[in-house]
Amino acid sequence: MSASVNPDSTDLDRLHAAVKREKEDLSPESKPAPLWAIFLLMLVAIVAGDQLGPMTGGWSFNVSNPFALAGGGDPRPGGAGAGGALDPFAVAMKKGAGGYAVCGGCHQGNGNGIPGQFPPLAGSEWVTGGTERLVRVVQHGLTGAITVKGQGFNMPGGMQPFGAAMSAQDLANVLTYIRNSWGNEGTMITQEMVKKVRDEEKRATQWTEADLKPFADKNCAGDIPAGPGAAPAAK
Image (spheres, rainbow, N blue to C red):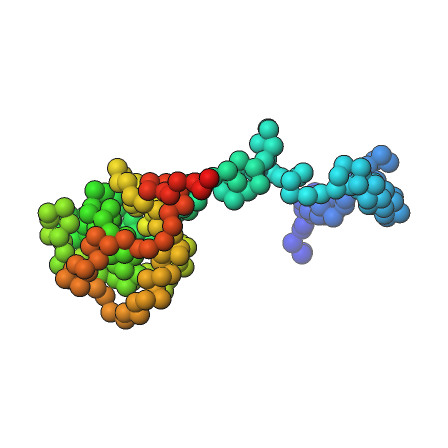
């Protein structure tokens, strides 16, 4: 005799397979919307938007500004509202804080540096002294032993030049920032000052402390529009 098959188990397998294949019937009220209805709704939305635009003054950044304050205006630096009231010094400080990220790895976020290796910027005479020396250091780099706040430092590999990696404006912003952070107070450095040094000095090698002595107390020529040492407003 051939092996018997349990009819009950075979029937159950077929039943389960059939149930999996079947789809639940949609109730009359949940049928998909016809294509003509979807097209009609899209047409109505387009026409309504075309009519409402002129009635509400149309779209513009001033009207639909996501940064707008309750009293109106744009609070971002250079914006049409509150941000537009920021003077050049405040804008440089704000942008320089972001640009300082490339310096923070060595000189640290608090500006205190790393003892024996990377000198501090906080309270440093190199930072608050002559602006021309500072611009030249960042523009062309620095190598060898240096003295900062009476302590000796010998940066591994020296300080690399950032002149090729940063625009004149970005470099000016960062220098303005470090000259006015962590208790420092110094005049603003502008992009015109940085450009002047770049045009005059085509040095291809890093500076040494001895090379920079003539610039220790020398300031870049140029107007200081805002911040410490700003020229009085013309009457």
